Length: 498
Image (cartoon, rainbow, N blue to C red; front, side, top):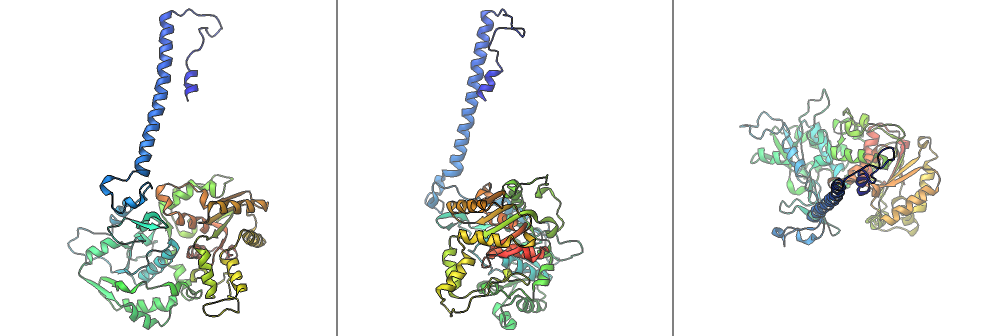
């Protein structure tokens, strides 16, 4: 910038024809002063801008206000604290179906709330439960009471500790998803009551809640499968006329880990669930879609113009999240899966419910194991599917490429929480096959500060739109992607597992 600025000042006293011109000493002095002041001005402006940036970063990234020394903030001194998404919370409370100042709420629809919903788990676990809770509320013709994605629901603690780093204790659901799940409109022709926020429910229903016993419904269902559980609750809810209904606080989720851990649990309920507007009009939040748009060329470079997803009018889940031709997405869990995969092998576990949908390839536990232990050979089989090494990953990719549904693959995107060094080694191995022109991973995304803490949802959007997706059958994050792909009509051959 400095060199360009100096270039606009004359450096010669000759005219355009090369002849010398007469410039008096005063004129030369003025030109000299003007040049110097311009240089000083540009330099000063650059230094001032740099100083402001340093101060801004120092305040946002490092400084811990003295007023909160000794509080929950001080344990993370020197770290940039996560966002709290206050604007999203406020927007949820401004939903038009929230009649805060009404003198009576009798004319509003009936509500259904599950206060014992799961907490302290990854987004994949939480999302699968939210979808089923909202599905149950919709079938009962009650407004679903949606809640935060919660790690810690202690209102005095804004941050939770995750592996020694601060994360938001509560993320508003609307920062992750949009549509009927968080109070958005149902499709035309659907006259279902709109979802409401938990805070509104607690306010207008204070002192007049009917609490239902989950244990009673479990005995009635006599099963952990989704269909009999849903039927038992519907029969009970249809007998209750009260507006404010919830499940007993200390009894946990309606659909729990036993349900989600059985690969047959969704079979009988699948067709009705997939046709529900909870799924057909599921949508990712504007924050997540913007992250996708900003990283579109990182994920899979385009050859022709493609309008940003966030500019396209919404119609439905299937029409919005179409397949990206040529894109292969791999979901590879690392970190805690080192021990988790050993645990799965020990108990001869099958795939999770959302990954056990009809028509998808399945994993049958090898024979030879017993309750609580397994053979070394069987453990190795589990590791190849659950925690494959780089050679096994490449071999699986090459095998899937032989399918007709995999024709034309040229880009690879790796969804992973793996260490950077391992991810780079994997990317080199995939490039070395000579089959792909572009290889990227979750680690390559450029995200703003709010998007960083919903990055799992960004990855799920990418996986949902892959031409071919290869996931982990024991991962709930994979499960959420699988559900959306199946519901959107993707051919089963395009959805695989390691």
